[in-house]
Amino acid sequence: MLATHAVMFECDFLKNSFYKNKKVLITGHTGFKGTWLCRMLINAGAVVTGYSLQPPKQPNLFSFADIENKMKSIIGDIRDFEHLENVFAEAQPEIVFHLAAQPIVRESYKEPRYTYETNVMGTVNILECVRHTASVKSVLNVTTDKVYLNRERAEGYREEEPLDGFDPYSNSKSCSELVTHCYKNSFYADGKVAISTARAGNVIGGGDFAPDRIIPDCVRAMQEGKTIEVRNPRSIRPYQHVLEPLVVYLIIAAKQFGNGCYAGYYNVGPDDCDCITTGELVNLFCKYWGSNAKWESQAEPDAPHEANFLKLDCNLLKNTFGWRPRWHIEEAIQKTCAFSKVWLQGGNIPAEMDKEIEEFFGEM
Image (cartoon, rainbow, N blue to C red; front, side):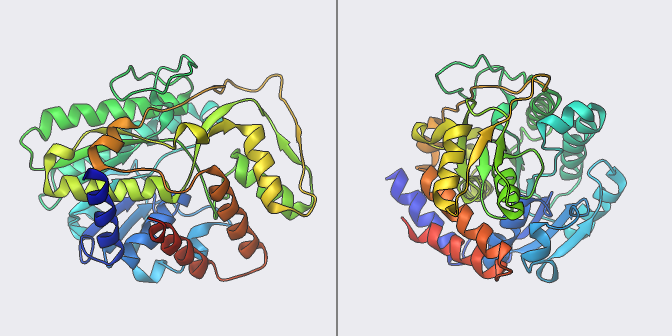
């Protein structure tokens, strides 16, 4: 029954029911996941306000997605509390998705202070704004699967296990979780605002141009006619298409909007069959890209620490909402390659985004 209800809810969302005319604020809206989320919400009829840093230099998905003139896009730093507070006061959001972050592990070693300021105090600033904005009813803080004290074991981590990310990025997101827990207990215990966190696994998909991520590195190599260089082909990660966690975010925020009992802390990851090595992932990329795509191992002996094994237990999410992953890793890679070829050929990116969104919801 739960699974059937979840599918019906997703269909309703696609048909512009729950999110139609809802006032939604998204931080980090110019990023990869933020842009896809904006496109989905705009298509669903939401009134969207975004708050984010200027998108990076070209290429960036936000500039291709044809959404800036369909929403209120505000450029600002999540660390600037006064500006953020003014944005909340003007937008009067009902639902808040907090995606803004410094999200790159290797960058966090170079800029640890900036990483903590953004990922920890940025969360404090958001929750302070929520505390003083009576219109807000539902908040989702998007963190990461890397928040856990990772012992690199075979079993997936569950939501109640210790948080203690190793590197500055992962640790700062652990702190963001703890800040959220504190605010939830200290200020939202009366149930007037429902607040959750979503700990998402590694996300892939068309339009990700970030540095130091394996699929963007693959696409850049194809663009330049080079062999793909893979730093750690034996590392195991839970890979999922970008639409998988975004749909979960939308479900959590909507369900807890109407019933605060759904507020909690949720792992958002693929099934075990989609926890594969980086080498296997790149093999699939080469298979679906074709054109003599190939890769080689390029280990860096003095590289900063990154976990070799990480897996999530997502049973809480499945049992609570009846959710199941829709696209497994081969289909996710196939979609990513198709999207990337459309981009390289100067094709219609908004149409490709809408096509994938429609296909995703159609496969139920």
